[in-house]
Every structure is written in structure tokens, then in C-alpha cells.
Image 1 (spheres, rainbow, N blue to C red):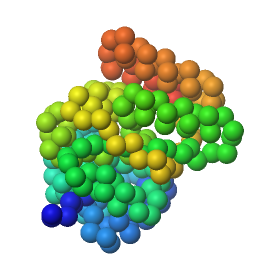
Image 2 (cartoon, one colour):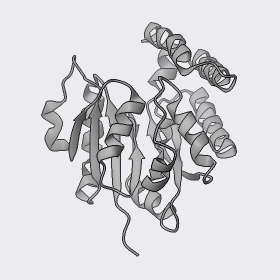
Image 3 (tube, helix red, strand yellow):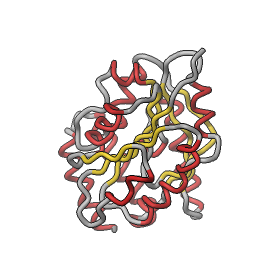
Length: 233
């Protein structure tokens, strides 16, 4: 059986040192033969032209995480697409675990996550996120969604919406196959919870998700979400 090829797609916008650190952490994966595609949403504060040597492809896109990830996927050469956030840290061997999960049949999945902070409530948050995802079959972008190109194309990629694009593509993908829920965790930044207050952020995120399930438009949800995150930054 021919070995599967992996393309890592990372959207970014006006990132600073976190992006540099992320690309440094991903260098060994490039050395292992995996493709790394950085899709910038038109950064003005911190242009990314100087990073061309750190990636295999550097693309410029209109801002919007869904649009950026779809653009990256459209030029990717790999069989498996792995969508990573800038502030997500991956462990050595994560690529092998991912590829092994999809070695038998085209599928999709995500990793468990660990939040970077030390507050005890963050352990509760990450536990709840991982258990909820395993029960529901819904993944979030923080969990490093990976998907075989064939399935990704069959659902039309990420929906062109302002928020909850990860929730929506999960809903579409799980109609085709249950996700592989890999238990070795990726580490993602806890700054969202720390800046906004852990309990307040939990209530905000659950409220937004409930509103989405009840049919509130992603554009309306984004207008509610951005003022909250701006005020807490």
C-alpha cells in the first residue's frame, strides 16, 4: 500500500512570536517529508513574507478562517489534510498516530487537547471538551481536525461562514464516518479563558454553541463573539 502523504494547513492573521514558535516546532515535520502550508489573511501589522523559507507554500487570502483553510486545501499535495491553529502545539509522533488512524480507510478525526494554563478549572474545561467531542462526534479547530482529502471534497470543504465552521464541517463529516478521537493530547493556548475569565468564557462558548444549534446565523454569532473577545484582550 502506498504511504499516505500529509499536508498541514495553518491559517494566520497578524500573529507575532506565536507564529514563529509554531513554525519552529513544525520544522521536524517538514524534515520528515510532510507539506506545510501557511495561509495568511492579509496581515498588515506583521507581514509574513519573511517566512517563505519556513513553509512549503505561503498563500495570501481574504481574512476568514474557513476561506483561508479552504484555499490551503485547494493547493495541498497530500492525501490527508491536517488543519492546525497557530497556538496549537503538537507532540513528536503526532503525524504517525494520525496517519495510522487513517491507514485502512478514508476517514477523519481529531486529537484530545490540553490547555496550556495551570489553573485547576482548565483541567475541568479540557476534560469536558474532550468527553463532549467523543460523545457527540463534533470536533473543534483547537483539536487539530484531520481529514482525508476525498471526504473533505465530498462535503465541500469548510462552509463559508463567519463562525462555527469547525462545528458545521464536523456535522457534515460524521454523516459519512464517525471521527477518530485520538487521546494523546495536543496543547492549545488557554489565553481565551484566562483573558475573559474561565467561567465567563465557558458560559459564552456554550451560549454561542446553543444559539447555533437553535438556528442563529454564524454572522450574528460572530458579531456577538468579537466584542466579548476584544473587551477581554
